[in-house]
Amino acid sequence: MEILYKSTRGNGMPVKASQAILKGLSEDGGLFVPERIPMLDKSLKEFAQMDYRQVAYEVMKLYLTDFTEEELKNCIHSAYDSKFDMEAVAPLAEAGGAYYLELFHGATIAFKDMALSVLPHLMTTAARKNNVKNEIVILTATSGDTGKAALAGFADVEGTRIVVFYPKDGVSPIQEKQMVTQRGDNTLVVGIHGNFDDAQTGVKKLFSDQTLAKEMEEKGYQFSSANSINIGRLVPQICYYVYAYAMLLKEGRIQEGDRVNVVVPTGNFGNILAAFYAKNMGLPIGRLICASNDNKVLYDFFRTGTYDRNREFVLTTSPSMDILISSNLERLIYWIAGNDAEKTRELMSALSGEGKYEITEEMGGRLSDFYGDFAAEQEAAEEIGRLYRDCSYVIDPHTSVASAVYRKYREGTKDAATTIIASTASPYKFTRSVMEAIDAKYAAMGDFELVDELSRLSGVKVPRAIEEIRNAPVRHRKQCDVDEMKLVVKEFLGI
Ligand SMILES: *Cc1c(COP(=O)(O)O)cnc(C)c1O
Image 1: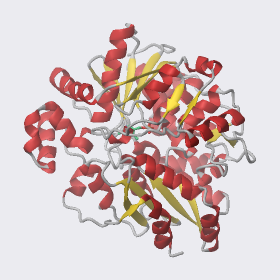
Image 2: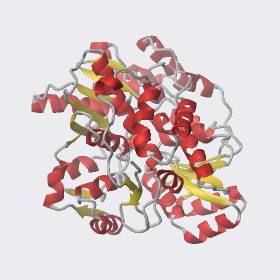
Image 3: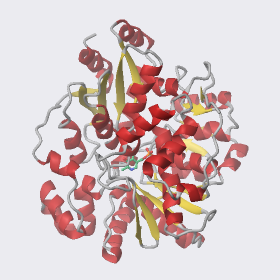
């Protein structure tokens, strides 16, 4: 059955999946949501017999209903290939009584690869299907990981250009090095003088700038987004929850129908929203545990029903979660408002005006699937050390936020359900923070010395993504103020 996508803010006609992917964001500033959530049409036992690509097809076909089987399979096969260093694509590792779903085996060693290795293929296919002749300009704000994963996905992809804005002082040294060494004539990487929210707000502004859109159209360009607001990011993320469940079933760790809890280290609310969609498709998920770092705006929201971004922005060792405006939450708000676009619009305009909003009691009543908590810097660091000492398993600082929250959840609730923790980055991407959490003595060592030391400690080979940047030349040095972002983009496009 065909699924159309409509805006959470209600304006405009519903569009096909390929059109929603091309647009990224709806013209009224809303996010595209499927008119209904489809149910899985294979049994969990059948999924247990499939490899990652097969699961991905079975899930994605339910959402991207205007793609042909051949188109979708081509996209999937071009994405989940030898760019991933594990045959399983997203393997599960058991440690300390939980299953870590390792989503970091792709080209840039963070979970963003799971969706961004397929998005360029979905987007170029969508452009072809819709007879788009313009060059597609991907505009992206990144808190560190999206940028590199999008660059890797779109570099030298014909018919596309990509511009990435990152907070100059808000990403890890390795994250920055990964981005500024990016090859590809169609790529531009810019450090902005501001934080991630500034970058994201600036990008959203460019998207809704009608004058700019017109100038671009005249020169044969149009914008699209690789941020997690794009439905083409969200849908591929649903697949690995189905896959993880199927793997547990296949290995006899659970019985068909057993409920598993899912813990997700959360920033922009994309990853956990994908788990929520998976649950609503019929996957037996119990609790969705939303883990925040010191920027605990989501924890406060789940606790009080008030979303309030008026607070200090804290730079932490889990920079990809240093976010005060979790864009994808708008999709959940729309859902708990009973698909009420007017209510969503009202709350979102309060958010952009006063920086906060309060949901109704009725809406709050629909949040019972979720459980929110946070782990402070110290707790997250201790969790890395503990897991290393007890289980010889090394996790990154984002995953450790989730792991620490899980530990508290389990102690507090005595809920002993099988639990999947989304492991969102390789420890190699945040080597310094990881090593210092294991032992303070590492503070004195250089970045790449630490990389080798981590390999020795963990017994895990240094990933290709890290070897590549060891000696790679810097290709991008541009920096700008937030109010210069438009200028930078125009200059790059020559308009
Ligand atoms: C992006 C990212 C997150 C946050 O994911 P959201 O979908 O934005 O909530 C967590 N951890 C890492 C390593 C990330 O790159």
